[in-house]
Amino acid sequence: MKTTNICLDYSPVYGGVVQAIRDFQTALGGRILSFDDGLEERSDEAAVHYIDENSRFMGKRHQFLSRHSRRKAEQFICDQNPELLVTHSLFRGQCNWTRQQAKREDIPYWAVPHGSLDPWVFSYGGKFKHWWMRLVGERYLRDASAVVFATERERTKAAHIYSGDNTKVVHWPVEMLDISLRAEARLDFRKKWGISEDERILMYLGRYDGMKRPLETIEAFARAKADGVRLVLVGGDSGLRKSDLEAYVADRSLSDSVLLTGPIYGAARDSAFLAADGFISLSHRENFGYTTAEALSASLPVILSPGNDLSFDLVNQDCGWCLSSNDLEEAVDAIQGFSVTEPSALEAMGQKGRLWCESHLSMTQFVSNLNSLYVI
Image 1 (cartoon, helix red, strand yellow):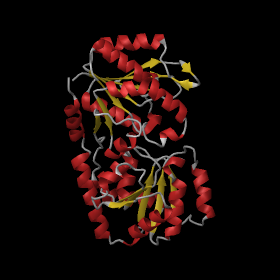
Image 2 (tube, one colour; image 1 turned 90 degrees about the vertical axis):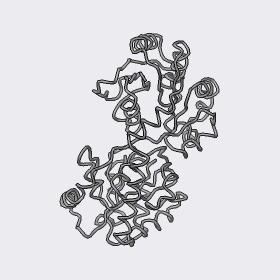
Image 3 (tube, rainbow, N blue to C red; image 1 turned 180 degrees about the vertical axis):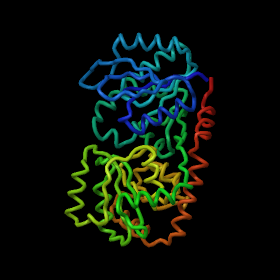
Image 4 (tube, rainbow, N blue to C red; image 1 turned 120 degrees about the vertical axis):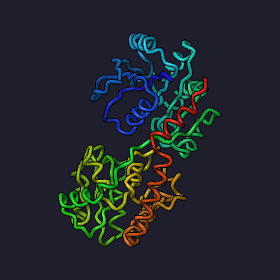
């Protein structure tokens, strides 16, 4: 089918959402239309078409699109002549514009909330978001031929706002890491960062952001007193700075057992996954969690908070520790369990997680699942 993906501010700085949009475009073909305010770095991907959008309404960005932007977007859609529109995220002007455009052109559209209907999202700016839902959102979601969630848990949490018959669950895809490179990656990473071969690496990979709870991760590790384990936190500044975390580590006298690398990108990032023995995320909210999926593909046992929506799919897979609450003592127990579990048992956990990942998170499966949703 000919498809156009529609979003705001398609920029690498937005991480997982942009990756998901890219995955939709890869799976379905067509172009990406981004209404853009020019404040963030633009992608150089050939599939992306940017339309400058600088309108403001009630202090929020892009509540309603300017006439100039609408006209340019309508011309772009006319030129592309798509059979399906896929619109990403909520609470902004691209949603109502898509509904109107789909009605005008008599074509279906999908709505992809990307976690926007999570109760946590309504814990801030809730009055505006409820107002938007009444004015625009309810009709926008109801008229969509599919409202697409990344996990069953995301759909369950969204039901407090919307639970129509058109809700669907499609796991986002992940590229499987080449685990044949593990031995070399393990040796190189440990040599670079001064980690001995007999230490287990428990890896956090994500922005240094309060929502992802890096401080709580360090605190749980400190309480666990996990001998022979090195906690490695890979990420970039975002709300919290590397220097903030380093000061916290120093105050707790953990400098010999906690390493903060800063950001690592590309092939080096893949190698960091392969060098690890386990993965931990105590995040408040991950409506999918690409890093968790990548950890599974790297055959790593995982420790996941209930904020990781994928954990609800993994709870019976015996591929790690899926916590039932954000109580740090649960995380402490899991870290202790990781530290004393036999290497062969950890390896078996990792293999089970990788098999699940291969079965559920491949691009082939993603394409098949999306195609099954397309009903004229």
